[in-house]
Image (cartoon, rainbow, N blue to C red; front, side, top):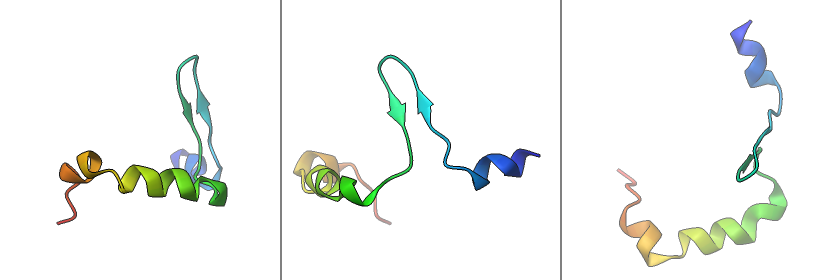
Amino acid sequence: MITDIFEKNTILESNRLLLRPLEKSDILDIYEIFSDELVMKYYDLL
């Protein structure tokens, strides 16, 4: 079933991209991204 894909931690990988679930070790990178004024300028919280 299609719902099966949501029950797994799916990883998609290509030569230029890696999509994976977030991990606790990503927190500093995420903080850095969301601390960037240019990023937040276009990030709509409403």
